[in-house]
Image (cartoon, rainbow, N blue to C red; front, side):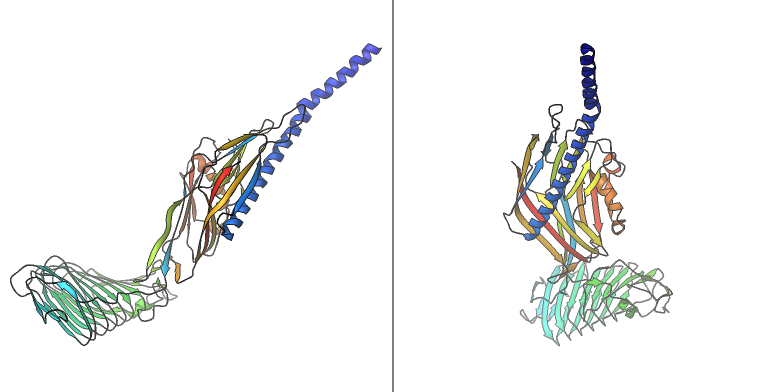
Length: 521
């Protein structure tokens, strides 16, 4: 009986071990691998929070230390821990950030000091304080001259149909006469108010006239087929135009209560009235309400002429707010996308590349599917080859009703790699913090230039899927190439990248860019 009992006992032990090795141990190790994944996710989530806090504090040199556990728990003596590696995300190019800013300070030109060149012409009196230039001889030449006079001057420039003029007048309550302009290009600019001016061209001269100021009256005539282009910036300006050729006449007006008086002959007129108040420019964003409807044309024009009123609203029936009695015109009442008014400084900020911030932990699981947990430019992402990546912790980008808050980390270095079963120490130091808080300090955001954020990532599907689930981002986030596996999934660990592009119309922006040096220890 003893041998039988021994054999039965051994069989029980073998059965127990077999069951443990084939069922209990794999389940336990799979649970250990899962626990390791959760541990790494939590560590990178903590890493995300640390970077944001240190960057916002803005103390150069401030350190960040984040341990990354590379090994899972084992089950000795039957199963060793599963290892992992940590490295930079391979092949990840820089991110890109851009947006537009507009000064709230209205800065029209204020004039010029007297100087210029008028060869073969007579200047009276000789400079300085010249008020008259006569180029009535037979010579063909190009002249440019800046006239300057405070008030109540009488300026005269006379050509011979062969002279091209570039003339600037800085004056108020003065009379200006420019006659017999010729040549292919002529420019007359008047800066000031309460001036009365006449400008005439001949021989097919092209006339370009700019008027900046209020209560100016300008009469323009052209013969011989040249074009006439007029820019008005001001309130209560009047321009009377007689263009006898077949070329177009083009007028753009920024202001209120401006009038354009056409002649019913020659080529068609194209007129744009942009609602603005040059006397009280309260905001740099145009058009101003229905201010354009205070402007008007004052008579019939050749067939094919068009006048456009750019407003922010029509009345509640959708019909125009003015009655238009003149023939020859097509009248357009337009509600354009708001943009920057003339003479408000504006520029595109950013636009430069920002170093990518990527950290990849590859989990070399034996009892669970191999997986990756990545810190991806502010986000924490989980991915398995052949499955769809998941956003664990979204990037610090929020947006609602035109208000955006953004934190973008940037790493100056790649971190190399470390693998094994121990603990890797990710060590960073803050190099710099750049902040934008708008509106503020005399600047606002340009509504015609949305906030654009562009990231390239192997986990583009996770980004696109997460942000498409947020109503505020609907229509403002795109993934490209749209049909690629990077955008559509499932995830392929072949290094292919998708581009996530945000285009957010913003009225308020808080942007923090934190630049860090990074190393593994």
